[in-house]
Length: 73
Image 1 (tube, helix red, strand yellow):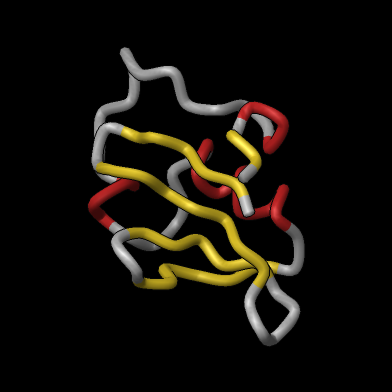
Image 2 (cartoon, one colour; image 1 turned 90 degrees about the vertical axis):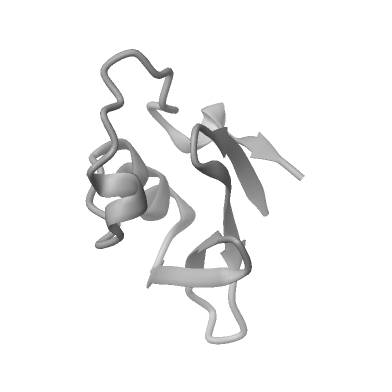
């Protein structure tokens, strides 16, 4: 599992029982992808299909460029 302490709260990437990796915020799985890197990319590119993140102005925020910049826990 990986986490990123974002301006809206902590985002997690976690392997789901389906075998996919889910992007989790506030206990809710926002989406699922085949790889954790794909989830990290979706956060970076703001294409999570959730306005809480996708519409946020991140111009002055340090968003992880890669899964290696997320905290592994």
